[in-house]
Amino acid sequence: MIENVSRVSSSALIVNLSISVWTGRKLGKRVSEAVDQQNNTKGRAGNYHKNLLAGSGKLEEIGKTANAIRTWLYNCTQPWGDNGDRLLPMTSLVDFKSRLTTYEQEFATSVNNFLTEYDNLVSAEAFKLAFELGGLFNRDDYPSREHITSKFGFRYSLSPLPTSGDYRIDIAEDGLNELKSHYEGVLETRVNGAMQDAWDRLHDVLSRMSERLTPDIDENGDEKRKIFRDSLVENAIEVCGLLKHFNITNDVRLEEMRRQLEDAMRGVDASSLRESDVLRQQTKRKVDDLLGKFAI
Image 1 (cartoon, rainbow, N blue to C red):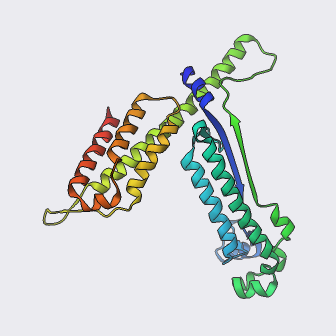
Image 2: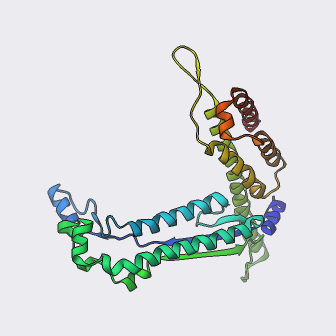
Image 3: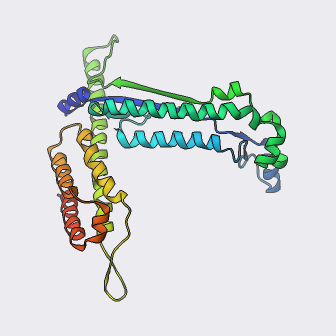
């Protein structure tokens, strides 16, 4: 397994992306206390948060952009630990950095558009009329634009993956070996987790395709085609491409199954699957054959 760790270390990087967005929410202490009193609770049973910018499309746009970037990152990287780190195959680095730069610019544009209009948005009458906070409105709830600016952030790092611990401490050799052994065990667990993610992606796309290509049976015993979207085929093709990069330990079995799925999808599109009973049956048979190999 140490060989696998060394291989991954030379063929992948650790990426960490942090995106922060101002929520536009503030604890309504008075309302929270009133709710507690009305329900005779003991102590603070819950909190009511005011949505200061209810209905503000520009703040919602920032949140949607941030979520889209996080989803993209998850899809094109593999899990690595539990602190937000993701594993990025070196073969994907050029495309990754290009897309990340584009996303960073989109995020910055969304934030700038919001900040440019923030002072107008927080005028007292504008909020009362446009955001309908009614009696909950309090102009003092809204911080300055300078303060809000600090609530938005887009930060990322790319770091090499070490193969063993660098313990520059005064410790007996036995203790040092124990620490290194522990560290190598952590790396092994993370490599296994990344590879399991690759297998799971393959299994998920195969299972979904098999299920959608299996006809329903009506009350008369007749077969009825299931409806499926174009993404059924698109996702399978996408996984074939991702697994070229995600097979970080050069697992022969995973690569063989990836190639078989790639062959099964060659020349296949969603429209053809909908129109041809023969093609659906052929494709389902190939997909089911691959699914059967997961049980071996």
